[in-house]
Length: 546
Ligand code: C2O
Ligand code: CU
Ligand code: CU
Image (cartoon, rainbow, N blue to C red; front, side, top):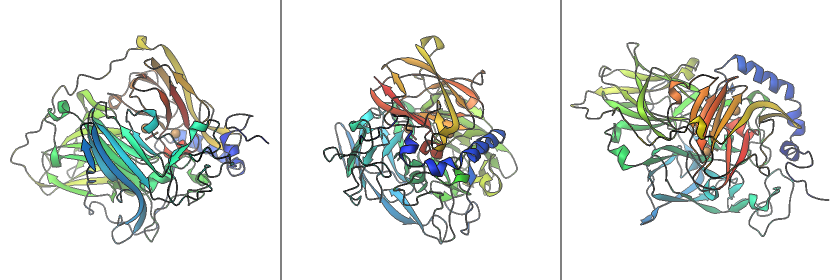
């Protein structure tokens, strides 16, 4: 009997995965959920309830992820090693949480890179399941971009099973290098360790690396597989922006905990080995009721009454934020945006509140000069309710003798300036809930992700406009390229859409036009929704640059 080939013979991937039954029952509720969500724009999923004792806000000190030291460095670049392993950490005071980590910490260690200087990271997998490393926002050759089936196998993975993807029909192993139910034998390559090379040949910005395994990205990130990667260059260093202890990366992520401190997540298969997916109430996304910043719950950071550069990343699976900085006397401090996903803006943009969708980054300068010594400046989320309104706080402990940082009126001059008339074609993509043959799914253009199907083929160097339309909130991310936002709902982009983006938040019912030039590298890349649950449930597609 011939093996089924993905995307052929009318079979969907979900059917091949054997999920028809489980998801089929849920179709009606799944679509009802989507309709309900469209009416409640702040809701992107169902919130888990922690049973652990939670600390009061603003007591746990803000951790700053350690900067990773290279294991070697030479004329061509820096070499790093990261072991992916389980760790027990104290996230909630007095309780122990089992995490999946890069190098034993959550967030993982920060990689500090210089523009144009290559970094190679050897990842070794000591976790119980295969993993994939993706550098989000990186301009990375396809071989190192972390395609969802380019696995790093753990040594403990049963060798008999190592040659097929879990829960997929067996196929003959391909010369011991990998295998699986892929139509394309090149689609799976697997090793115990894997070297990822990142050229860092791109505008300086805050990137992040995270897991990207097919069907299991959301729970793996939830367990802790996320870290920061910062690209810098001399031009940015010379701007005089707040630096040193006054430049602070903030990875925001929500989680939920059981009474004994374990992370809660509604996986259908908690081993993350066989059956992907989450239980029915969470099909729209998994939200936690504890807000972590750099891995600490509602932390506090003691600092001085000066300008600070806050480098925000929303590493939550599904939660959106709309952030404000509030003083104790009820004022909202200016959030001066100096950069977005893909680096510095041309000129600063001042906001009072700032939305942050999953995977988006904002580079901000906030001046604490007017906050009294001894007071708190709270970072709050206007979209939260109850305890999820709090994010973190800064406690102002002293007034500095001087603050010699500045925000120059011109931040950068190299932002790509693509015009409509540069585009050689326009494509349309609908991001919607829908039924697959098997039941509920999150689809792009009516289809769930299929690693064997090329959805988009773009000649290297072409400029295109993509029109993206959404049913509910979908933060849409393109690998390889940065893009500019041309319009939202037929109107000019919003103030926070400025700059070069790699993730754009589509709001319910909204159509957004983006423009980009597909340059850099040829090869197979992805675009997908970065609501991590949607991504795992099919909302991802292949982009081939040829
Ligand atoms: Cu954050 Cu496909 O990535
Ligand atoms: Cu990415
Ligand atoms: Cu989505």
